[in-house]
View (cartoon, rainbow, N blue to C red):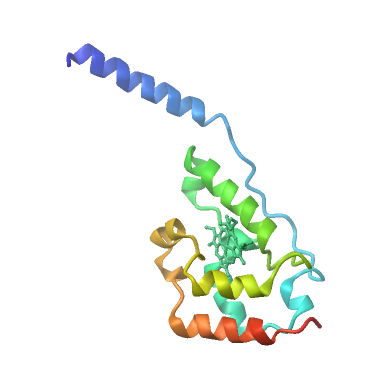
Length: 145
Ligand code: HEC
């Protein structure tokens, strides 16, 4: 491989990367309406709320902590998508009838949530067995207010 080839490919990659940065997904944190939160509709014990805030809120609330790499494509695209999808499926700041607390227990019990890639970057979001028990015990007994 000659040097010129290496230089041109490097330049090419750089140009593509720069071009990707012009496609900027929306990273919004919509305002929280206190009447629509999960806690406004269900009795949520503090220990359950703490788990949801620590391990789920970045994708399932309107209070996403957007990290610096969420500004950099292609990570920005992936993260914005996760948050958009996550909020649609389960949202502790905008909870509705179509969202299911039973699924919450199932997702954490099977280890599907939090998403694996998220856990790599946020190891503190890993749930202990006891936390899974606590959340599942709550979802099984939870009654709408
Ligand atoms: C990194 C973002 C992220 C985190 C953190 C995260 N989720 Fe999710 N969650 C998603 C996305 C994206 C979806 C929708 C796609 C899917 O089902 O994989 C989803 C879907 C769900 C669903 C709906 C599943 C279904 O079948 O409809 C539930 C319930 C859920 N998550 C619960 C949780 C709980 C509870 C936590 C915290 C313990 C959590 N998630 C943490 C991104 C996340």
